[in-house]
Length: 281
Image (cartoon, rainbow, N blue to C red; front, side):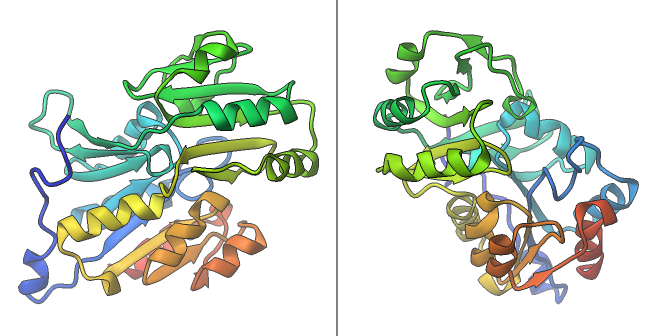
């Protein structure tokens, strides 16, 4: 596996030529696509235009690799970088590569302490784990489109010894409030986690977020922090919105997400991301 110091993509040439180029970090679900996974023509067109204009567009999503790639293809992004698994995986895009991309960094952690604590509090929950090879392992026939591949069913105890990039916990029998209370009571240590819109929990390695991965790429690309823009709608976007010089929350985002942003655009149903992207052209 290569490292982030190899084959950098320069983001400074156009700046030296007098044209401002931005590093634009875009969430996927609830930002580029609606909750049915549909990307509108307006958003697709605006995203393609900012890519064509030479801005450094980086998709930054909680989805895993296989579910990120179709989005990259939709917006015509062939070169640059992508961030998935909430910052746990960074890939380099290059059409000259055999698959059009290569994973350049994976942030892994030992899932045993978190899984053990969660199982005690949420015995009826379903668990899935993305491992260091990009495979998904899951209990209770747990499948989700964000995995990008079909998960392989395993016993819960098999998850404890895996090297994890991402752990997902989903409860079908707990309310959102009860689920959040159970997570808080676990006192998870040594991991970074975010609770989604439903009784859904995403776990990454300690200190790993979309923002941490984006900051590494910003440094690598030589982009000034003042030229960073981020758009998102979820709790897993809060750090990213705070990281960007211009953090934009979607109109349907929860209050705490909007509070972390510099501005709020229209909702995903009203093509809010397209409005922001057009403002950069």
